[in-house]
Length: 267
Length: 362
Image 1 (spheres, one colour):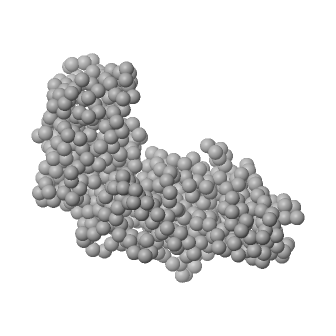
Image 2 (cartoon, helix red, strand yellow):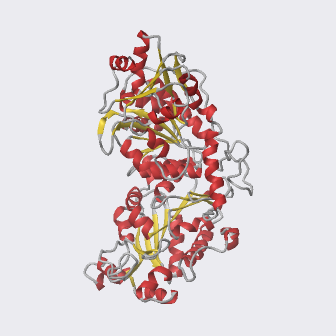
Image 3 (spheres, chains in turn yellow, purple):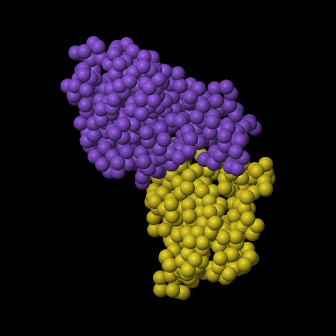
């Protein structure tokens, strides 16, 4: 398999903005998938709505572009109805943390055999830059013109608390670590969750004095704190999120019984 | 057996091997029996976090080529509407059993109603057609659940069984015939490079099951026959939506079913679901009264009603709502000489009593 077999060339040029972090995620995902030995014909890619939701439309495999927030529920149906298929979900902070929050925590709780890649760009990119559940405190968006006053979600911590078997977060700067985590996630039993903090220069950067893709990228990079250090830096490392700090690293790697084994679908 | 339970047996008979649901009165018995019966039938039962997840999961399951179903009542049916539209747009065969209760909102969990008739037709946004069947007995909960699967598979459309709390909780016997027809969807057999939504004069594309190397992209966005999104070309949208609607309208004579007793009667009662059972009692006493019972509520058996309406001097429509199917009947019957087209509403869960019906027929 090469890059051009993996992606649908007939769909190019893609619709992502110049400088968007999705390109990095797609590139690293291809590398992780190619190394995993998984069969493209036996893998289904599922997505919800938003920029991240468009990724499966560019992958040359069976793919289901679903309704907003619901990809995990659709994906679960596919996986349990045909356990021989590998099912990968692409989602974003709006899709997963807001409208799809209920499906997210329950999919993690069940530890269902899905790989979930979440591109967290801290904003609703496709609809024009509204605040999301992960927008850091005081930052600007089209719906928080005076600064975001809500506390942001830490999606990876939610996944850990709810019961996922593998959770890691990196930024688009951490290409090597991200590739390794995606590779691990693809081969992990149970629910595996990789969150990528990603730059949205068009909607997020522009409103927050980060005037190019490079500046957002540097913001992600310089605000990343390894998980090992995060607890020393603040009393409760969730506080880091409020300031726009990003805890990166592997959050959990464990072997809780996965869903289909538990309910007897797969022996 | 209860009507709800008979529906489960019908589903298993039709080949249903996947159920996802969320508990709700008066449909819970369906999930409970499915939990047991699907294990025995080597299928999968899932209880999910809400009705949105339930319909999403059965759509996902259907794309693996598995016959899949959910069951709910009004509040859950409301939650399912967005993904019901998704199933229409992606032409995914699924079956939904809606055991209707009094609404709006939480309403009357344990009392029967027929308030979801228009929701079954128009509940999701945009233009589309669904099929909805209205059983009036335990036997029909069995038969019409099978029929729902057959129609859904054949036309690649979500099919709804519009039951109600009385029929769902009614106890009775049912007969399993030796010759039940089971329809399966037509699959794309060979994984080749093709347009996944190409269609012939029947307007129904073959189904490309996931995991067979088709590498197909399925989206709720407006798409052309390749399956790829094409959202700004008016012609692509018009062609798609017109076909989604016409694939049902073209076949309406094969889909539509009605029970008609004394078709040439001067007084014609139109009733479906629970109230139609009261009409049988009325007909035992009065040969001058006829019954028109749509079994397919959507598409409405229009031609059949038009025929009967020619003879009627008065048409009385019984509904456990403030008038939903009444307007469909009125629209069709207005084309006949009949001038009296009346609605007899019952709200609160009681059905129309035979003597009340006789009074209104006078």
